[in-house]
Amino acid sequence: MILYFTATGNSLYVARQLDSNLLSIPQEMARTDRHYKDEKIGIVCPLFEFEIPQIIKDFIRDSVFETDYFYMIITYGCHHGGVAERTQEFLKAAGKPADYINTIIMHDNALIVFDMDQQRSIEADKHVDEHIAGLKADITAKKHMIQQPSQEETDFSSRYLKNKETNGPMYTFPLYRVTDACIGCGTCTRVCPRGCVSLSDGRPVFDDSKCINCMACIQACPVKAIRFASINEPNPEARYRNPHVTLQDIIKSNCRI
Ligand SMILES: Cc1cc2nc3c(=O)[nH]c(=O)nc-3n(C[C@H](O)[C@H](O)[C@H](O)COP(=O)(O)O)c2cc1C
Image (cartoon, rainbow, N blue to C red):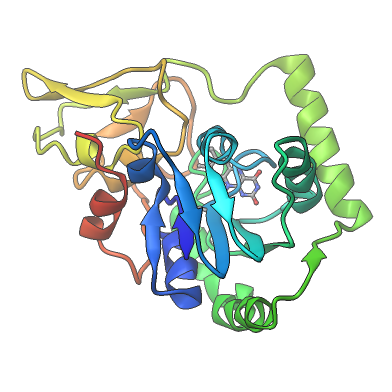
């Protein structure tokens, strides 16, 4: 069994290659009694600023996993920054240490840093399918391993997190604005894993108190009417969804309305 969270499909794509029994974490969050039992249980999710997303931590803390083999796969775009070790610390503190934690580099969907078209052009160099085959072999063999970071990865995330502590977060609210291109289709309301986008007079309204910056809404807008309110992104005309994943897949995974 795999429990997954995805904003733009990378984590869903990986989860699908590893298991056929998939449960979406945003959908499971709606249930109060969360007890999962299987021979192997995996969690697949993206990396957000060198951490697993808060929604995943909340999910893990309040769920019971009854299994012989508990693993996590974290998808990321350029630097994992030693997230596996940090995640194991979190899991140990939660009383649920993992047997295996690994990461996989994929298309980086962080719009405020990267041009999605440029990312697409270097995707083949990341050898995603080869890496997935390696993960699958490890999990089939029930390998025990927590990925150890290189010094470069540790230094990279330390610098970033120190800078965040000194200069404040990169993502400030209100995060988004909506342009006149909006057609009121409501796609943004249906891809949000937190149910924090609603339509008012045919235009999206964001509940910042629940937003986790996952960018599902801005990435999925079919007319690119959602823009950052005060951040200059490298290419506002380029958006991303994993090519093996449909918009319906994202809606089915995340829709909370
Ligand atoms: C808010 C945010 C923060 C991110 N932080 C990192 C990061 O620290 N390092 C990194 O390599 N990728 C980072 N990424 C990129 C994603 O982890 C990566 O593209 C992931 O595969 C997306 O998975 P998904 O398509 O399942 O949502 C970030 C993306 C977002 C939206």
